Image (cartoon, rainbow, N blue to C red):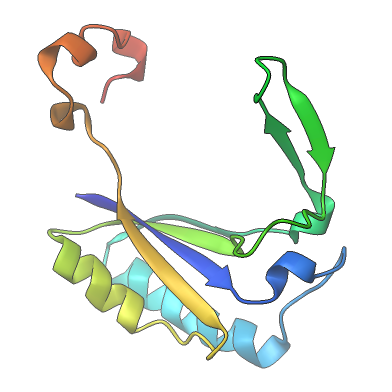
Length: 132
């Protein structure tokens, strides 16, 4: 089962361009990342630049509208993610609990939808190139 662990740092929505984490926090996170890798559960991970450096594309009127960051209405934004492959939601949560996150960070754990999760009529609409 694949799970995405999403890092949501409080206050990151207001971070300016070039904002970087402190070196001690990075060192602790690298040890954690190495433990995921050594356990054989890590598939991918990345940190994300602040929203002030991003853009959002909305489709409210049916026409794409681009809004450059920062996003004044944002209350929570992603700071990074891990993609892990584990046996259960409980195991994914256990890995999230081991993260050396600070008190201003939250990790959301979400299971990735697999082809087998979809009913046959939906699976038929997905080209073979996009199937597992």
